[in-house]
Length: 291
Image 1 (cartoon, rainbow, N blue to C red):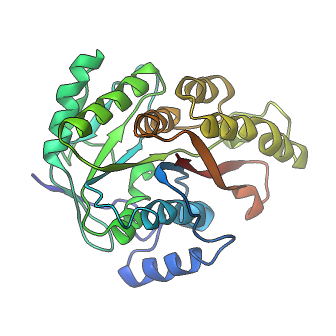
Image 2: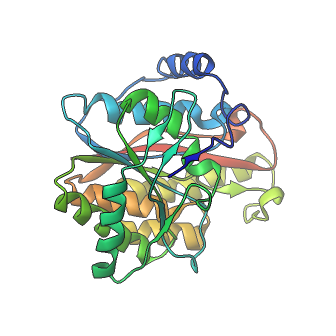
Image 3: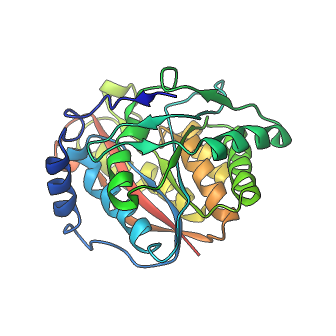
């Protein structure tokens, strides 16, 4: 079956269990801490923990703590930087390494998702640990998942920024329903990547560009996420360039809507500009999907 190694351990996030736990405990003291509510899933950012770890941690912690009375059978983690021509994929077997221990893949659930995709008119590639992409979007969430959800298995999924992401969300929901699984969902996306480093400078350079990103471009992304409108989420990412993994966010919103969520609640908005002011920066947000 195989184990997927952690590629960003010790660089984008701390390498040891103790360091990760120390950061997590500090993150939980930030801002308003953990939010209360009836949450089925969330969207979190995936920059290095130095930049967006606090937002991701508090959002995932809110999802976990408000579901402690439930026996969560699986955590779906949607991510990957995908293009419109890409097809959905998932990691269907083995485990994924984290500083807190390995996270097992729910193989039966993954297989059922693949089977259910046919009825949605899409094909999902079932990847091994060797062929599933190694990138930050999913991996940076996994220490939080392992810490807060402990021994709950996962299914990592890649969703392109097309209507296939919506169909994929339906396939995941129907597969969980078939197997009578109680699931929660994490979608991973950063917001606007602005500046010459990213080849995107419609509002010029300097502080005025940061204000445009925060109050206009990223505000539109947050509005789409809060509305849980999967098509609008995808359209925002593709036309406004304000979500790098719009497919992952759309798939998560679709699943949560089918699970009973009606709205998104913003945990926080921030950007790398607040830590490293400059001409190139990235926006982040944490959104909880609530009934």
